[in-house]
Length: 174
Image (cartoon, rainbow, N blue to C red; front, side):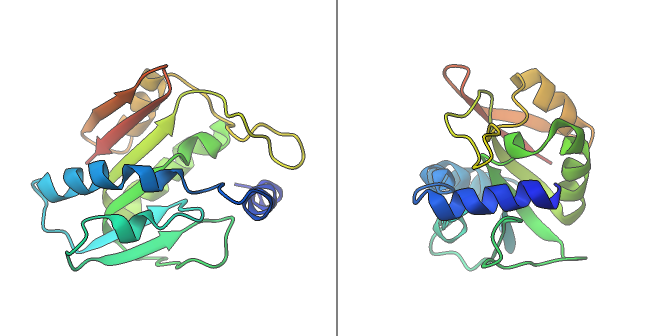
């Protein structure tokens, strides 16, 4: 993403107290997916686009995992690469914030440093705007569009949950 857009998201995090915490509500289902997956036990998890969430600390409690966070709009979180590979990349309510012309590039990057991806993707416009008035959800597309994009980088893409609305999908990619 361009630096101006990242600055807008950074300002949003600073202005809205609860902004960037939605992933925490998905800790149980993500823990269940990871601990029941054939690749378990895994050793490393990265929450990409974590915002102010502590989701990564809530995943698979009681298990020893190296847990990392990264958000391009926040400098206060870990940055585990370049060249760092993790077992699972988790990205909740992030991909829809990426400009459409940058989605393929980001998905290619995510597949390059993670063996698997668990992503929750919003399929609707956000009620929030960035400080400059731009809509927060820059890429609002139906589930089949996202699945096609994900399949360019992952051999298997499974929709684990569809939230009514259409509101959101939760996908597991390996």
